[in-house]
Image (cartoon, rainbow, N blue to C red; front, side, top):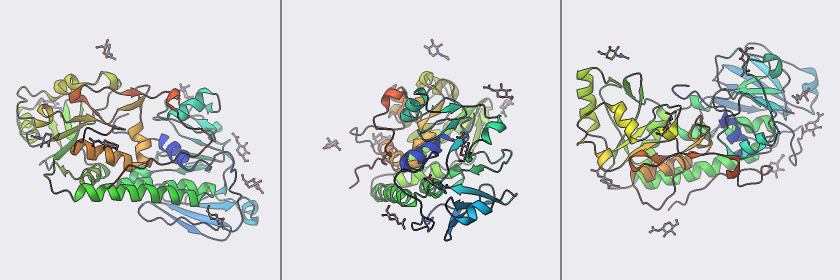
Length: 395
Ligand SMILES: *[C@@H]1O[C@H](CO)[C@@H](O)[C@H](O)[C@H]1NC(C)=O
Ligand SMILES: *[C@@H]1O[C@H](CO)[C@@H](O)[C@H](O)[C@H]1NC(C)=O
Ligand SMILES: *[C@@H]1O[C@H](CO)[C@@H](O)[C@H](O)[C@H]1NC(C)=O
Ligand SMILES: *[C@@H]1O[C@H](CO)[C@@H](O)[C@H](O)[C@H]1NC(C)=O
Ligand SMILES: *[C@@H]1O[C@H](CO)[C@@H](O)[C@H](O)[C@H]1NC(C)=O
Ligand SMILES: *[C@@H]1O[C@H](CO)[C@@H](O)[C@H](O)[C@H]1NC(C)=O
Ligand SMILES: *[C@@H]1O[C@H](CO)[C@@H](O)[C@H](O)[C@H]1NC(C)=O
Ligand SMILES: *[C@@H]1O[C@H](CO)[C@@H](O)[C@H](O)[C@H]1NC(C)=O
């Protein structure tokens, strides 16, 4: 579970936002043969949607395939079925679906099948515990075949006719990742709702970024770094670098990305470079987030003299595992993908603290903050209603 395999639970957050995406059935939005509402992909680089009278085509760069989405009440849907290496057809709106939840599983009321029970969404948790979902083994291919579609993020999986690759993680920036809500929307004829959610998220994100990046104060230098097998590395994830830029910070410009703490030359250089950093985000993967503290970080660091580390003396040492379920599923890998405006607001607070803001995803281990375990009791909305994106006060 290293280097955060892209979580399928994201699908649930995208689903929760549109709600009547419904892997089950569409209430309200009666499908018409004529497609009246369109989603235009504005930012995402890895999928496109084209519209015909009774069908849609999604071109998905994630798996190099085209999905032909056929309206269920059209003649073409009853006559046509594609399953080739380049084209697959789906009858929409989907009557049901399942999601690959190998790493960060989850579910929604309308979802009928999942592959593990570690779920970062409290509402999903509640539904699961209420028995509204089936848990199945992710190597049970026969089981997958029972669903109209199976959404997965792993592009290396053995392909099957009902598999659709959902891959926001391939995008370079946070808004592009969030725009995959339109991909989900197309399968359910809920383009209008997907457009509305994305527009609200984007406006809020851009507003926050505008204020943050026009600050005239000094820009703190930020390092995203993780430790594994004796080696520290600085992130090269483009979306993370973009977050720092949009929050008004500077990314650490190190000469190299990996430093072996057992190599004296490496350690010396690592020590020096860290002296130039104001904010550290420690992404080290752990099976026990509750036990990952400042002490753990210092042990992993292996540097004796920490006197020049302002991120320690000035208590700005963070992790994005504030919200975690069963020590495994991080909300950062899930909710934060569909709601990047919240992640950005957190980072702005990390960089320019007001002390009058409640973090959603980040905890400060230099201040001894501990993770919150996500449980079903935290579900504070009616699970049958759409989740609204959380809009952060801006301006
Ligand atoms: C498009 O969406 C709007 C808002 O949901 C709805 O009022 C309208 O009827 C839809 N148009 C068509 C042709 O489906
Ligand atoms: C098409 O899907 C809608 C919504 O799920 C359903 O109500 C309708 O019966 C379906 N029509 C056909 C012809 O399958
Ligand atoms: C899933 O199926 C595989 C292959 O049949 C088996 O090895 C594995 O133990 C199963 N996993 C669970 C959690 O049952
Ligand atoms: C999913 O929907 C299809 C088409 O309506 C149906 O044949 C299948 O049995 C359903 N599968 C499940 C698991 O509900
Ligand atoms: C780190 O350096 C030590 C000492 O030079 C070496 O034994 C070890 O294999 C290195 N680790 C990695 C991951 O390169
Ligand atoms: C976590 O920390 C507690 C208290 O220090 C300890 O008892 C427990 O064994 C630790 N858990 C793990 C998995 O290391
Ligand atoms: C310490 O943090 C404050 C914000 O909390 C910031 O204004 C200040 O510049 C920081 N000092 C250093 C040395 O990084
Ligand atoms: C703290 O935030 C609240 C709500 O955003 C605001 O009403 C209040 O004025 C803020 N307090 C300070 C001291 O900035």
